[in-house]
Image 1: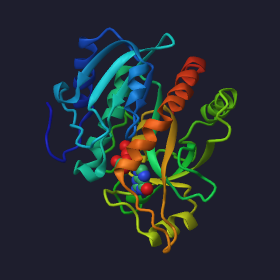
Image 2 (image 1 turned 120 degrees about the horizontal axis):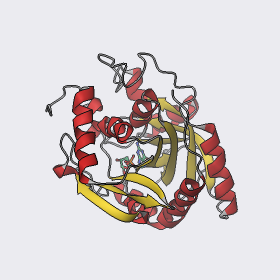
Image 3 (image 1 turned 60 degrees about the vertical axis):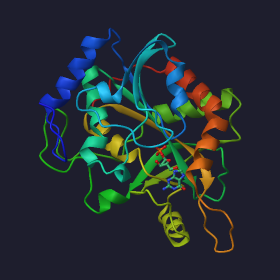
Length: 293
Ligand SMILES: O=P(O)(O)O[C@@H]1C[C@H](O)[C@@H](CO)O1
Ligand SMILES: Nc1nc2[nH]cnc2c(=O)[nH]1
């Protein structure tokens, strides 16, 4: 029932995990949250928590990255039932792409209709500063260009259609809500919007790569989120995503800057409170989703 290795998970496998979780908690979440590197504090906002270590959940991969605790936390936020991944999975951890995106299908089967994803990213847009929060309006899927797409393989229509549209991947109403809430909270100076580009990692980019990605239209570069977005949209969940610009991508051969994970985690700590406030307020104001992809 719970296959190992790089086999795809069937609908029944995902259902078995979701059903197992539903027997362990009374929380019936409508919002699913994914915490990026160093942003796990988001999970601490939930009231009446019921938490599971990933190692105790059938089928779940394990977090192997510093800054990703590896806990699935259920609870309520402003009275709304939520489930929060305190730690996500990345291609560079060696997991097959279907495995790192498995939690999205489990979210769907738990009853989640809206997914909020966060990530740490390097800023390519020269107007961005470290500490800016970028609302994702679109993405560039580099692993996808090379054929590594989480939907490759047999399609199960119970999740979604064979060829899902991605031009509407990022919900426009939620982007507007984030802008409005951000302005009200006084975050206007550091709230931006832009295009996120995913690469496989774990090495950070060369100068030539950063220059190329910027020319291609990316405002920020990272190693996650896009695969989750594709699977979440495939199964009809509404998606909102934020990048915290944790470091400036190095674009200049004279620069002494060097990207490093410690700076990523440090910036996460410094901006965590505002990021949490933004999401907290958004969740409180969200309308329920009635949008099936
Ligand atoms: O999970 P996210 O995308 O926030 O993590 C980013 C990408 C790498 O895992 C790590 C690099 O510092 O942060
Ligand atoms: N690929 C990539 N991922 C990141 N995550 C946080 N910062 C960066 C970065 O500069 N590049």
